[in-house]
Image (tube, rainbow, N blue to C red; front, top):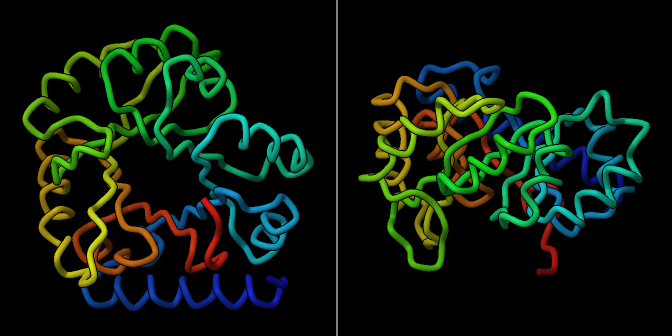
Length: 224
């Protein structure tokens, strides 16, 4: 995919974000666009950077490390988000690499991050709102207790919640998932809601998303 295509796709996504915000009386400035760069080559990430993107999300620590090294000259201008399931044996490395970890899905993982973080790090708590057995995350009913523990851990700042909605053919079907995450966020007095991907981010915005995680709508279909 060439630079013109990336720039066009970024423009189209931003336009869709703006329209979704318009429908619910929000400003597009309230929604952070995080480009998900799983399997995307560093040269293509540079094209996305040139198109104005500054927030990038990665799923795997080693893949992210390679890209960060290749893009070291842009490091001061890029915010890197960890969005994939983070294994405890990779937590120390992740704590030193990423600017935000969106996928904290257990008290144990949080404690490892807190112990090993070389600096204060903002995190999101991942919630498995739909109780899918194939996905990680806190169950809604255990979230408050976990938050009460994690919020007091040194070097961690709980900024909000994240979820991955079920894959459905009709995006409207996941509106209740986003709405429930917003309710959970509000009950804890947090700020950020990271929810919504290429197929459903407009619904997520209408339900209060402050971060949307977009891969395919920017970079096209990719491998696993």
